[in-house]
Length: 304
Image 1 (cartoon, helix red, strand yellow):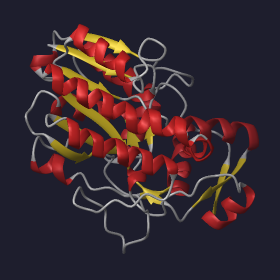
Image 2: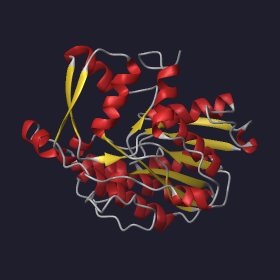
Image 3: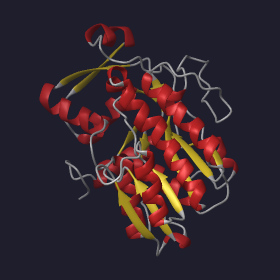
């Protein structure tokens, strides 16, 4: 089996490649079909997924069995001021990959986001795959367009929405909080935006379980359990052992201090219903996954 992983230098792409090369994750083994897979990791500048001809030529030449698209413009605030760049990466890129996958018979796994939802509070109900999207940011709207293109142009697809992702590699909220705690000793974090912290290990594990099946469709894949950013930050500081305090604030208070920031969903908790009803949901409780992260993280950009 041959697998192309786009966005291979990012948090998720790096973790997927690691699991493919090691044959297992912290959760368990990867599928037997993938144990001897040929892995082709690609990223900019080798492959610009927004370039139709480049994608078409690359996929035709490689003829993969599976394409896992981790490439995206994920800077939420940046998307607000660089809308064209966001549209190219988040909408046209998936379209190009979907068309190329169809031409070569490949399966396409496309990673999406909780930002496709409005984030309005709904009485505390986690949103499953049947919930109607309604993005409120440029990031969310371009990612939703990417989902629609994948659905339109590639029948053999898995769209996997995730949220609040962190990993051993790259920049993420966990590392930001640890570093800010060390630097300032006192932090203020919003307490009225809730969701599911997701360890990239869990997301990569589930993607690899899915991609060898014919269980095509739309999936949510996030850490089990719901918390606020304040709850998340507090647990990060506790587990890290950093001498710092975390105080709650409202979204309005944060926006007043950072007026250039994009609106964030107040309620972005997702329910992994499709996983439970198909291949099985092995995603860990968010606190257990975070504790495991701190057991293995080297404190910088990798594992001990």
